[in-house]
Structures are given as C-alpha cells and as structure tokens.
Length: 111
Image 1 (cartoon, one colour):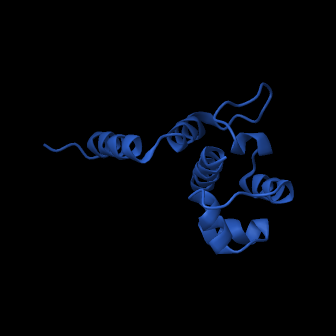
Image 2 (cartoon, rainbow, N blue to C red):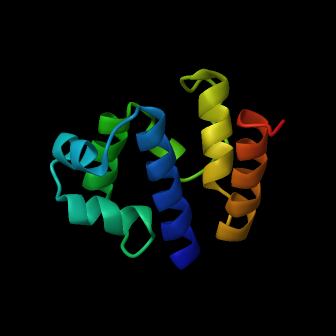
Image 3 (cartoon, rainbow, N blue to C red):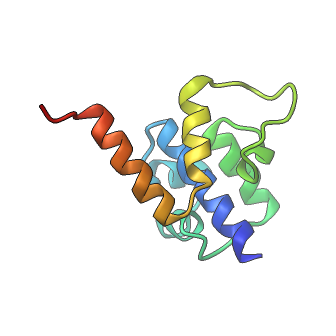
C-alpha cells in the first residue's frame, strides 16, 4: 500500500508542477490544508475517493491519472511536457538525481 501512496503522491506533484501550481494553491483549489498536500506528495498519507476527485478536478486530470502513468484510451492528452513529467514522477530518488544531472547538462552545457 505504501508504494501506491508514494506513486499517487508523485503523480499529484507532477501534475501540480505541470500546471505551475504551488502546494498552497492546489490545497486551496482542493479544499484541504497545505500540510495535507505535502503529506500526500511524499506518500506519508493517502486520500479517500472524495478527496481524490477534488484533487483530480483541481489538477484538470481524470482521477485514474493519479494512480498510473498509463493514460487510458480517450483520456485528455496534454502533450510532450505532461508525458515527460508523468514519466519522471514514477522514478525513485536515485533515478531522479541522475535525470536531474542529465537535464542540467543539456540545458546548461559548459563551454
């Protein structure tokens, strides 16, 4: 169950960042505390269905997209950035650190 909470939290964070929202703004839109958003994003707590629906609405996604990086047939497509951010959300900390180095090198080449 912890793995599902972590994956859920990472996907919430990825969709929040895709929209350029702070945790505070997402919390306000979903009608919860910023502390709750923080705990959800790190996988420290889960969410019940009513909250999942409010989060999905605030993030402009189908609720199922908060549990998987696989987008169901017919779901809203948001382009390349959404694909990349969703894929990154599924990585562990070591993989994210490695990807961060690659992105940094690509965006800020030395020389």
